[in-house]
Length: 135
Image (cartoon, rainbow, N blue to C red; front, side, top):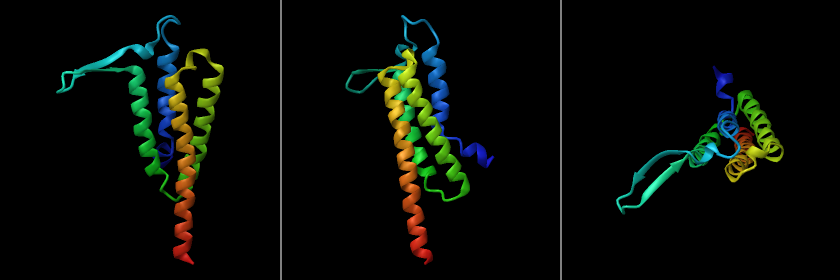
């Protein structure tokens, strides 16, 4: 169970993005499909597309991954290594696969990079604090 929790959330969004962005025809992107629409009190309509959903999920996952980085255990080291692997996969797919070369995937790739950087930064800062209290 603990090993399952060490899988980065960005891995799941990477799988979902591959399924959505690589399905359908080349002429019609699945990113522009409307998920839902609602009206604000100002009478302005807000349209939520699949692309917007991916970006919001990336922001939320980045928030959760920041909290996961505060753990100091062997599992957190595995989590950081897997996060780095997921980022590398994001980057390679962004650069190599034409249908994934879009702004939505670029934003998700950047969020995966921030996950790696913040994970290592938070873990190192936490470890320094633990060492300072211990010695």
